Length: 190
Length: 150
Image 1 (cartoon, one colour):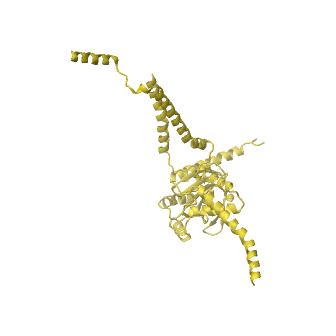
Image 2 (spheres, rainbow over the protein chains, first blue to last red):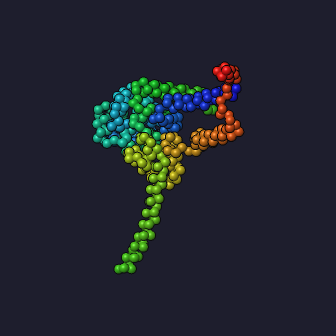
Image 3 (cartoon, chains in turn cyan, brown):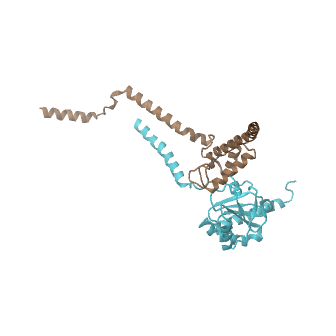
């Protein structure tokens, strides 16, 4: 009787350890969830390579893609560069803006990178890393998808693929359409 | 000249000393805060120990925020707001973290309690170590030994 009672204790001690190990081995220690999701995107003013400043606040009402990149980030930044440029060209007339933030780079290498991939979307430099720290960036590349209200809807770590880009953009444009229809309904807020 | 020199020295000391002490305390704060923060681009290194450019930028930002009048706690809270609790090398002792902090002590206490119980049992039943024998088997051995002797 005592022995069977003791034996029944074994699963009680082993199962939680196995569950803990299973959970630990399934999670990626490098994937750090951002606490900024669904929160207002930190504002910034970006010094553009083409001259002038880009203020994030001025883009309110548009879906904004903020991409942190560097010319030394190989191969991920090289893989996603055509996706970002293609996405910008496909969606720029639909209320979408792609903004590139170059970090921890040299100006010459960054310009060469932009020339190579024929970047036509606004790109600027974050010389002191303030913008990237403000966005909790811990690796390059990282991409933030902002809704039309200026909130961070999604953060992507690593190279953005065409599917990720279009899925996120379509989702946010749809969300904006629905919000517009809600606002347009008569009697709301009265 | 000697008196003038002494006066100049005292005046410069009065002007420079507080700044020097202030600066060292600012650098101490920067060092202390950055030692508590994880370098985001490194493997298990603090911002204070990392030679990476990002850690350098983070140290500059810590210094800047302290100079702007923020307290060390406010500076740390800023980084937690941006990166989450993950950025702290030593997790805060609250909520689920608190449970993780006390778990090893609970384990030790449980082990000690189990040890005490076992030792007490051994003390109470010193002969318990002798193995129990099947009476039928014992009887058979006795019988066979008796047969051998006869």
